[in-house]
Length: 89
Image (cartoon, rainbow, N blue to C red; front, side, top):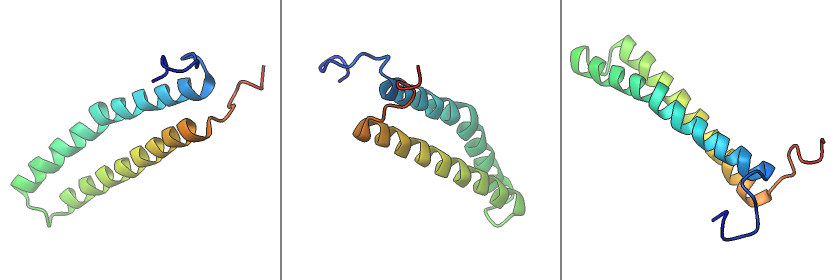
């Protein structure tokens, strides 16, 4: 889409959105996948009523809220197109 309109990729709100998107991908692969695997193992071995399972599930939920907030920031940047750091230099 960025190539269809006259906005360069270095436009602050586009660059910030790309960075946030890459951060979300890194959180998914680097943090959520290990938490989810641990949660699956705990569910199979100790059951879903165990304290360890609940603690791991809480970590996963916190991460989901963080990712949701980051996605909301991306949507904000894409809709509002804030100047961000472009007026600072």
